[in-house]
Length: 232
Image (cartoon, rainbow, N blue to C red; front, side):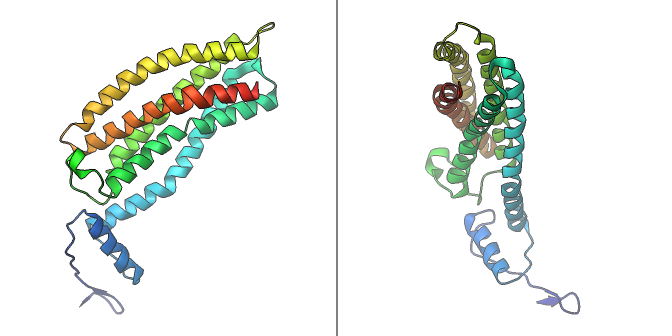
């Protein structure tokens, strides 16, 4: 090592792993486990990954709470306060699930270098953070918009003499029609990016396509109507 101070030195270390690969990140982790400060592109990418993982739960919680507040207001006087709070909280949490699943899919495929033949890419030790963030923001925005609209529809259809289950079924069906059409268009547009030569575009397209489809199937078809029936 080259001394740079009284108790410090610089050691230039190499590895057989390709820069940007999983092996390079593993080498960084191993060096740091030996209480060595490591710099370079792979170390910076690893630090960015760790920072994103620390902040994602905070961002998700913030979005869920904000959406729950919007749903609470949108429901108006359709329910008593306690039930409005429960419905808003459950819908807020459920609406975060598609984005979480999309992020997990990107980490599973691109973080561990899987499906390289299908997507024709070289593993880089993890998905591109900009693409992941853009995909998560897009899916979260779509889910939040649909949930807020669904809550407003439920409040509008609530009234004296109306059977709650009939009202929920009618509002769910009306919301599902528009959501299905939007999902088909959005998923096809995002899927087109998966076939591009740009790795960031592939990751963004896969994340958005998977997220909007999951939102339709998991939240719009199953969870949102189920939560409304349970609370009502």
